Length: 305
Image (cartoon, rainbow, N blue to C red; front, side):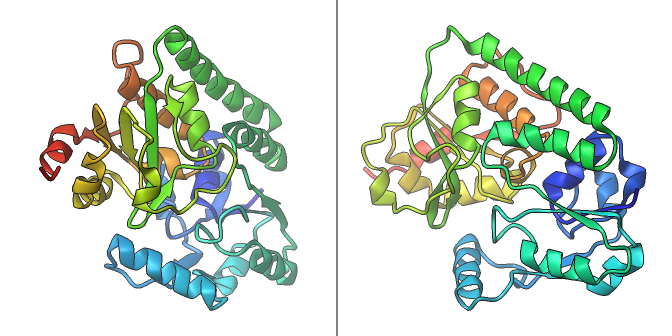
């Protein structure tokens, strides 16, 4: 079977299922595992490079407001790859090529590929997608095995923190302007032994104003900008240090949003393990290869007297 993935999270799932040799094309954002970046890239963004966080937000709103697509799809190259299965999504209009566009393109391809849509909004639905993808790729046993292994790791974190006090946690999925962590983020926080104080599980990440966050009294603040890596997450948090300092949180962290929180794939479990370690370092070991930074002291120095 020849498979093209138009979502980074699906690419990670396909590799976790042992289907590297079946994947013939990916997106320009598919960078994990590293071998994925060596495959033909089928998409591109219309956003200019080098934009600041606030400029990205403004440009995204402008493009969507005009009814234009944020991503382009190379239909000619896709046709040359002759896929049997295309994996895409429709849950986030700013995260990938439009699902409707993919369906239209697929209908014109000589190979007449099946289009599998992945639109999880909860962690449970992400796990369901692992199973569904295994079935669609004709490796159902692998799908069940990968899912079982992920669920075992989640259960291990649940057990480790079951009796521990739960810190109040504020997760910020963007800071310029602020967006609260939605979809699977509140669930990840709860499994990791925290109490999410904002953002509804299974719902889109809402944009808010800084003044809307007054009175939340979080003990832990986590900066996890959607699609951004650790260095960028730190930079965005530090640029908003004075605002973050107003929470008087005991701990402020920046994490790798792109790798372990934004993409609804297997590495969300790494994200749960990381949160478990941040909330309860004596109970949960950090996952290997996943970076984070504690910014508490720096944020504290940003507070105006």
